[in-house]
Length: 113
Length: 113
Image 1: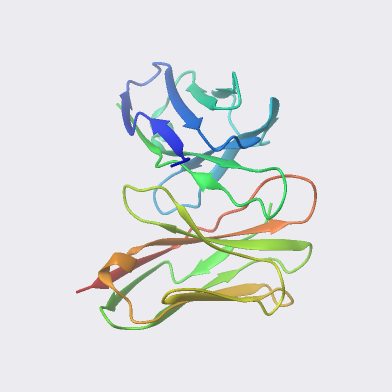
Image 2: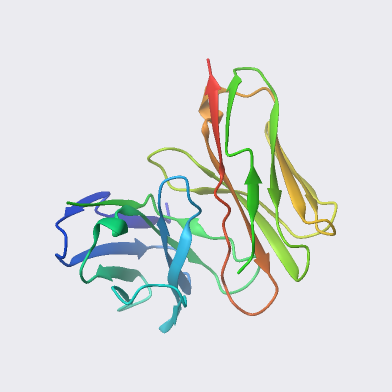
């Protein structure tokens, strides 16, 4: 089945130690998104790519970066994780037309020690 | 940034009960309203995409209505089952050429056997 895959499902990193989360898709969608979701909060959009065009949200900290080397893969890099960055990170994809329905991966739960 | 409100924040019902919850959003510049179901340890899954005022969608025991003029949508579950336990997220999309959805905090439904 076509799908969105996130690895790893659980990631533990140390305070200040760079960490990379990965996302891949077999849907061949143009748009890929990264969300951060903290407990009892709404998923918050960090950035999205339309093809190779990167779109950063105005309030996304500089500590968060992203790469999309090809259509299938997208990475979230956290350069110096703080305790406040512990969260669920969701990757999603969508087509660039229609109702923009998003297809989600299962998320990566990041713990910062 | 759209202001999206979902109520209640959480809900406990008994198996067999029918239930409903609400999503409120700005009525101006409306394009579409998405409902997602997010079960623990799984990917958020699209339930409905609604675009027209007065729209009603149904999938099995779950249905949704949309009022774009007053800015709200209701999600109904008839005869709740334990497998309906999940967080239900709504996400309106405004007009314009971006590809972003704005999510509410969700309603956490727990169905007790």
